[in-house]
Amino acid sequence: MTDKFKEMPFKKKAEHIWEYYRVQIFLILFAVVVSGWLINDVFINPAPKPYSWIAFYDNYINSEITGTLTSSMTEKFVPDGENLEVRFTSYYESESDPTVAVDMHQKFEMLFYAKEIDIIITGKNEDTKRDYFSEFAKQGALAPLDKIYSKEELSDFESNGLLLYCEDSEGKKRPFGVSMRNTTTALKDYDGFKQEKRYIGISNVTERVENSKEVLKALSQ
Image 1 (cartoon, rainbow, N blue to C red):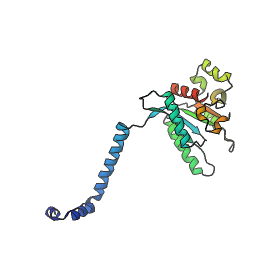
Image 2 (spheres, rainbow, N blue to C red):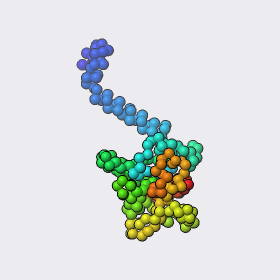
Image 3 (tube, helix red, strand yellow):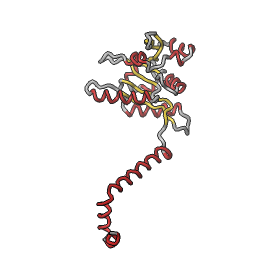
Image 4 (cartoon, one colour):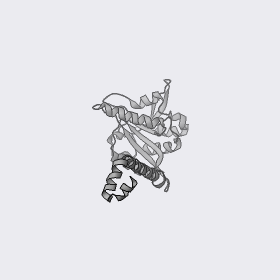
């Protein structure tokens, strides 16, 4: 077989190799591509890690706006040379397509329980009458702000009438949200932020508390 293979013209050799070894060739190519992707992603061009991750829930925010917010807030908070970013993503429910609603909620929950989501921006859906912010507070997904802010820090929000009090899991009223009423110009492209019915809260599982407090303050001004 070896002698016959050596005597074959180049085209025949190629056809023979393809006929008998194409599966192995595909596996080798796949391994090369995956290895190259991993080397690039881990060592050459690693993706930025979150400085703070902000999730809009029940709000469709297009990628152009989330991209602009990510760039501008990253420039504001992340020192040059650090591979971090202030990341914005959007998760929304769709009455016309329940599949989209389920998919969006599953993606949100996956990131939340992985302790990636630091800040949640949501409120009351006027169409469905669901108050998502109060639901998150009741379920324990949001941290009571009196747990992570001092009385002096909270008084600044209180004096401007920006604090939202919700019931916690035990039915006790506590400050959970900061109103978007006086929102930063960074969010001016989205009309919904002009309403008082949207609030910012901090995830109860975040491990980036200080970063999140800084970003929340910037977003509420």
